[in-house]
Image (cartoon, rainbow over all chains, first blue to last red; front, top):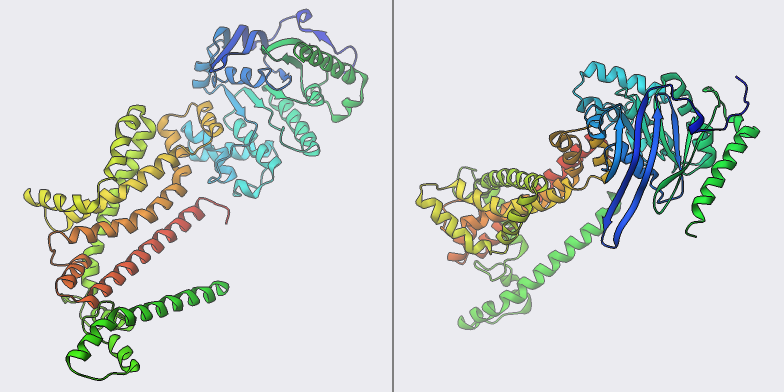
Length: 275
Length: 288
């Protein structure tokens, strides 16, 4: 596939695939002692099957909150949201998604393997099946051989990979990732991004990915959602057209730089409102 | 270990020296009185020697206590009523029973308090105020009340141990069961884990270090509870009974050997809990 015009506006794209996440006029207001905080305001978004959607924006723009609403960890105060056609609460009960947090959040008293099998244990899956699935998930993140190690024996990057394996172990079609590589250095981050892309290409999962980094967002995504704070809202949605088997080299291409530029412009426009 | 042996020995020797000096000075007045009544002349050397060998000294010397302990622990059949092993066992059995019940009660209360909001409001004030009542005041009542309904011997003492030792367990376990981070609780929520699953997989393992810290306190005060429980009724057996009998007859050496034995038993119990703690935490993969 040739890298031609890769920038399109979402409105011009034909809706062909099944919508995994469908958000309409969503808003979320936190009531605090200092008055209401408008975390999300009037958010419209559709995430389709197989999409890799990045949420990017400055701190306080509501990108993590939006992900948490999708995961039913926060409740919206207005608007509609559906995951696979049902409410986030039902989707959570059906274990429709795997969630990767900013920190690995591994349980220190469990070995890596037993951390990966934790969700399977909670879902009451048989022991042989648990071990088999943990093996597969650990292989996907290239952590096979570390099953019996405890979290403290692994580096930060490996711990985060283990937490990704844990989110993959029960084979949910939707993967929600909240700045999973935010605390890692750039080399490790590049490597994990490459691995994540391969994983996504191989498994055809739908990924929602929160990040601070423009290159990360552009490199990984099929759709970039640019957000702005106070109130948290979407100011631009950019679709990209890079092939699924893209490599880090695309970061040198004009198309890549053009999209990165558009993202940066969007972020700057969002910022000028209050600074 | 080798780096610590020196300081430990120095402190031990300093304590023994202090004890000997204390014994000489505390016992000297009665000894001088005795010389004067017998119209006897005495030297300082003789005074020191005699103050450390009185039959009923105000403060017995360490070697007197050591000899008494040897005689009542090793040189006597453990079935004898004079054996400290026998008395220790009587106290220890109610200590362990009380500790077991107290730990169970403490953990159950904590589980309730953590999971049910109204229990925290309604139970916690009682848990705390229960410990503001002096145990010496409440112990006789427990013995009398339970005695009136026909419960005697081991159980009333164990109840007093329970009364003392559930408290630190409850307080630490409430803190321990609430120690998981928000991110870990969110994780369990994304799996749609039940309260019960979150408890077993996350809250309870997180609380283990807190539990063991409180168990060390609990086992020691459980022993105190058992001894206190033996005092008010003039119990026939147990370390508390030995203390009481010793004070009736002015047998200070007997009192001190019972005291030291109690201290040794407490130390051994705390060491055993510490050993269990290391084993359990090692099994939980804690960084050595």
